[in-house]
Image 1 (tube, one colour):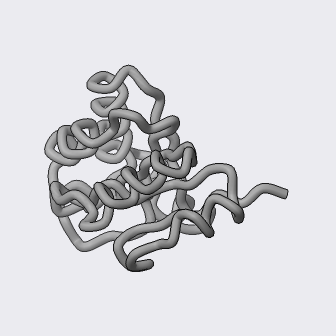
Image 2 (image 1 turned 30 degrees about the vertical axis):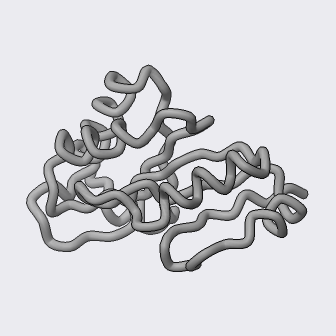
Length: 133
């Protein structure tokens, strides 16, 4: 079984020499809203140093417009094998619908030429994907 850890600034400074022995692939948090993750540059550099392929995800934040978020994420996407949208939280913003999230994903795809996958919890998706949206 393969593991693909999802890491961000919350894990601190990862030892990539050890990480390389534990996995064949890693996924980094690239951004949230219009802010890059504080450890992204270091994580990418270390991943490249040890030859560990990586994907990136954007933590969707409904207080920022989908287009602003897409511009931020797409600007960080160079070199990533895969791109993902992490949709799992609402902050009470005006861009909380599935339609908004899809608009974000479509804009990233247009800007990068890469497909964007979504990951979320099953019940979160069911509870937040209203049929009229």
